[in-house]
Length: 368
Image 1 (cartoon, one colour):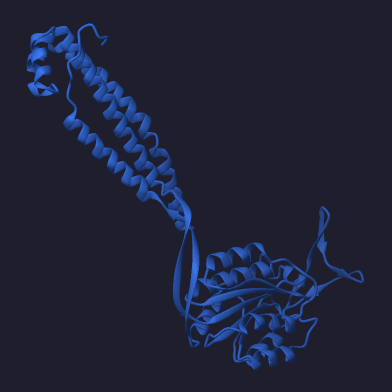
Image 2 (cartoon, rainbow, N blue to C red):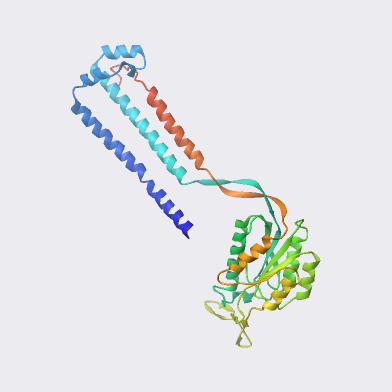
């Protein structure tokens, strides 16, 4: 929340800073008028003309022609050149100011690829998406609580390859093993959907398929569920995990007291019923605890503080690690340096023009 607030403040300051551009142009115009009034009060043009340095003219021929020519024509040339120089200078400074403000806004576009090397394990997050996960005995719902727990786990992990499987009566691989946790969180927030039934055996089998070709020294599954298993055999799931040397860590979501399952029927809402009675779902810890203990993992119960998610991540971090490398595509590369360089070059051009602009003599009959 603090980071978001500071970012919002900075964005507001940056947007307000664009007021500087028209304000600066107004002040330049106002100052130009004031200087012209002061010059008119200073004295006769002949005095100002006499004060000019000979180096203002481009060539010696121009200087001699100006000194021997018509005073008013020379003053017109000087005034016009001064106005031109002022316009060019102010335009360059304004352009540099705009480029600097664009750079401060940190423009981003394009993509870049980089190869990331880390040491970790291969891990699959297996999330229960059955209808019982709609229950609100933990706020805002069991599935939303599961998402929050996973976000905490991922924030404590680094260097691991993580996949995502969702399961109800059927399973679905939402994300293969990846080190891109940002993309994984996006899939977690937007791709999970509810389904009927719960089949833990099929869920473990799906995780095994993700991990069976892994060459990592340690492979694990974090199974997040309320423990209600209406289909599949738990002993078969245990045997399958042990056969492939996969540890299963389980995280129980819900309460032993349980709650009803919300349903939406058109514009109305209510609770799931069976034979006219409201269906009540409770967390079943025994099956989750058994699954973890018999595969070398640990069981945790979700709490409001989510300290159990931190402990789970620490336990995973103590497993033997392997070296991984993965090519990752990073989006929205910073481009502020390009605009900052342009601003510096524009200011440098202004300095160069200031040093080398000279006045060339023009015929008296040429319009001025």
